[in-house]
Image (cartoon, rainbow, N blue to C red; front, side):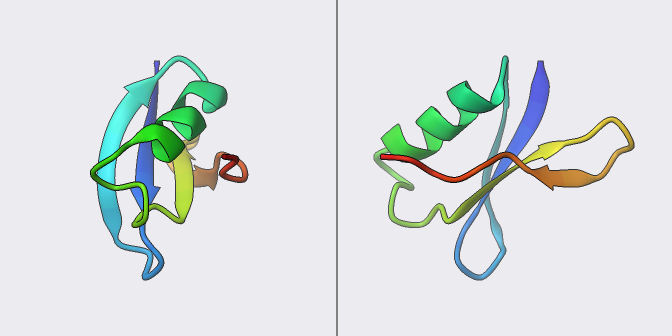
Length: 59
């Protein structure tokens, strides 16, 4: 499992969860009713302890 964080337009963390892969995390960002308008970016915790971009939000 990989740790993902969801950021708003200001770069503030809106939420944080663990997912099996990028696709699941990105789908969750788009499908989340309580935060769907707030989430602008999804990042994952890389192997070196740094946060990395998970990919574009689709949906």
